[in-house]
Length: 339
Image 1 (cartoon, helix red, strand yellow):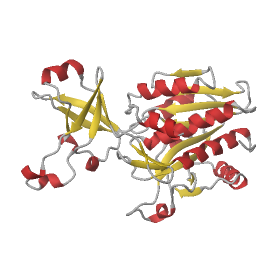
Image 2 (cartoon, rainbow, N blue to C red):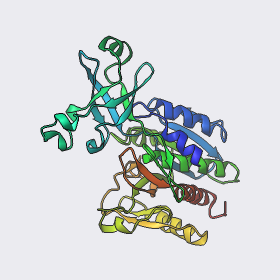
Image 3 (cartoon, rainbow, N blue to C red):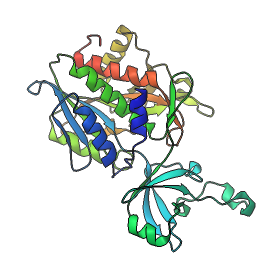
Image 4 (cartoon, rainbow, N blue to C red):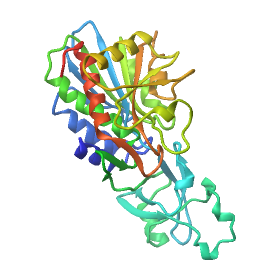
């Protein structure tokens, strides 16, 4: 799991340009099924289990990550950026990034040195003032970087103490890792359902993958996997009691199916899986909101992996929470038999 998370978080895959991540995951899933494809929206779709079964279960996690797109190149070769997804610009200045042009170019988002600052730069920079220096002349940049190319944060994954990992893109490569691991478990089981794995695109922008891909199938139930907030300084309300290493978060929301929540809760209790509860009084802000409304409606549950520092270059999850999420999903697909 450590290697899988490191690999996934080292890939690009900004919303709308998920190709590198999609290709990696499609190849990974071919270990467990021959029925794998990447569609026109960069969604990865794989089918496991009984293709003629009466019941179809969808397992979803979004594969894209937040980042930027190139909007301008000035006469000195600096590359101007605009946000793609919910980038926290407070963390952007001085950040190493990768510009995904004709090849990958490492660069740094420019920052005013404090010696030259008049104090106005001490606040979060406006998104329209983000420029990247890749060390090339304007001519070289223009030859190799195009308007609309994606730019991702670069933060080499690291292991922390207590089995924790810090990296960019753990939102939602942690969820992707859980589903890939679940695919391994499920492929070894005899199941009476058809399982569709959807690693969906563009959740951070338009949820395009979750809105389009499920329409190709008659889905009975869905478990969507994402990350959600763990306690850290400044976190209040319900999330102050959410801890890393205490298991996946099971969500209760009007848009979600309460019976699925109760089933997942019982599976946790019967199989010694620690779990935590997340309450959403309206929608969840995840793919589950859109999948639940597919066609005439899909019974949907949301399982989230606790995470600190969301939408930053130093997101943190505990590996055991990812592994237990995978085991819980597999238990549900099997119908309660231990895995």
